[in-house]
Structure formats: structure tokens, C-alpha cells
Image (cartoon, rainbow, N blue to C red; front, side, top):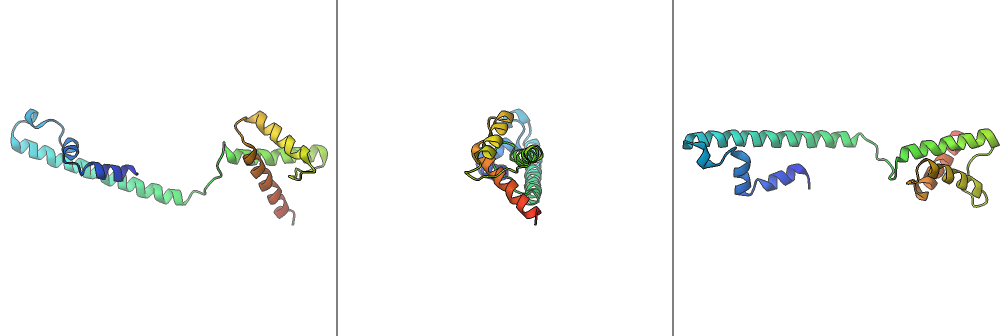
Length: 143
């Protein structure tokens, strides 16, 4: 439930609405006209707050449509970058690129071991996805 819809639902309750639009209890206020002025000011403040919340909700909705979704996991973008860097290091020093082949367990073990040293919270699925992404990108860039 959004904050705006929660507040709208909350002010449907007469007691809550009264509490939000009156600063003090009626017996503390004084003349009835002063209470009406306070309530009017309270309504104005509440309407302004609702308008600000609506504006904020619209602004965030527009902003969220401009942000690309990211993969789940701990610092996933950094893991993808890190795996690519590890692939570059391996190629530079061995002439071999990483693979996900079961015949090349060394690639997967090397990447997994270094990633786990860097951050033990990085899961095997994230590492595997990052390796798959790196290998896929390398294939598209070499053609």
C-alpha cells in the first residue's frame, strides 16, 4: 500500500481526520470561530500534504521508468564487472579465456574462488550468470 493511499484511507476515519486537522483539543482552543479557523487551516495543510505526496509519487513513477532494472544479488553490477576483469587477467597470463564447460572446471573454480574471497555473500548463481554474460558479450564483440 502506498503512503498516499494509506493516508487517504486513514483520513476516512472521522476521529483520525479530526486529529490531523486540529492542532489542539476543542476544550483547549477557546471560541468556536477560532476552532473553525483552525480546522480550515488544518484541512488546507492536509490537502497540501496530500498534493505534495501525489506529486512525489508521480515524479518517482516517471523516474522509475527511466531506470533500467538490475539483476538481483549482492552488488550484481560489480560482480559482472569483476568477472570480466578476472577473465581479462586469466587471458593475459595464460592465454585462456573463461568458459562454463564442464571440461574446464578450472575456469569456474578460479572465478568462484576469487569472487568468494572478495565477497563471501556472492552466490554461485550470480557468479554463473556473470560468467555467462561475459562469455556472451565476448562472442558478440568478436564477430
